Length: 155
Image 1 (cartoon, rainbow, N blue to C red):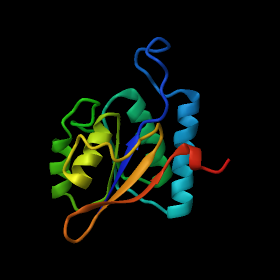
Image 2: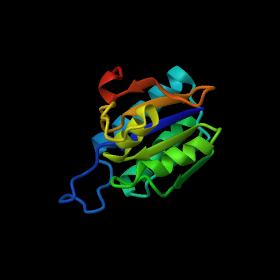
Image 3: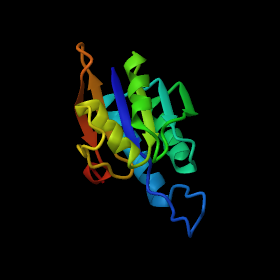
Image 4: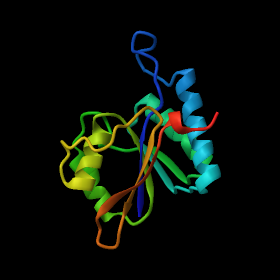
């Protein structure tokens, strides 16, 4: 099983727009990421879940369109300060791949918990529009399979 952890694209500041939707650059980086991953990995994710905040909903919709996702929805437990143990438990019960679009510090804490059973361990340096693929093996241990950031994408 794979879980794809995605930090939302770059958002407008709260001074520019209190809802903090994606900036034009944020939308473009997410679209480029989605297109690249689909073209080079044929990634098909059946479910894309997001925190419900506008910037994550936009990021999820763009990525779902690129990856032919069957289901896109807001899910509890993906906001910045939410307890990562909730998603660690949910993932333990899953067998289908899922993409989780969220925020820092939650994504970083969830990755630390899954990979090392320590949410305080900053193992991955997430960036806006970054995608991290974690894979669960037969022994139910999580491993980093790959990570892609917008800076690595070809122009």
